[in-house]
Image (cartoon, rainbow, N blue to C red; front, side, top):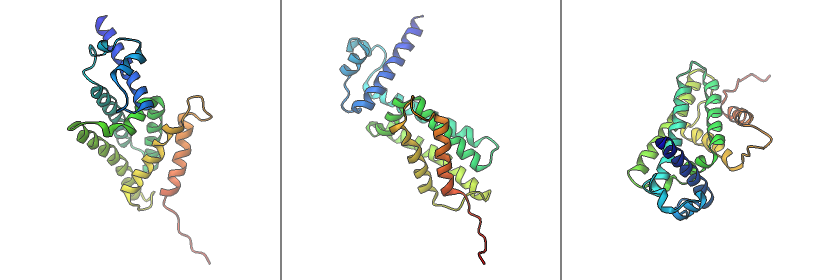
Length: 200
């Protein structure tokens, strides 16, 4: 029972930290702010976590691992490249919309990580980008996608779908699946190989 309570309290601390890091920024958030948000004494927080940076690390790496796990799962499925890219976009949007505060921290506050964690985090980001690069290469090999600058294309795709976190509202007009479909259609329009026909 005690372990369960400790786990629940730690989750509460992480959730509160994600909210404050999103609202105020990591650098401007203090442990006292966090304690106030939770309605507890600041000293009580240290029973569950060692430092503010531990919270940042936990949020950033947890989100990175979620994104990478989803992308690897997509690339293990026997779909064509367009189906894979649509699914990868859908899973990315779902992850963001289900974890908006944590996603905001992952996207904006990771630069506050200290070494060696900062380098490790950058490596995870590169791993995730590589999964999208694989999909684009598959699309070229399958004669579905045009040949493009893959680095530019991947960064453009991720920038587009990451921006969802800036405007998505749980009670908005579109749910995550509908947003993902619209974004996928838009992105596919720039990637699909166009048929060349002779004009007489």
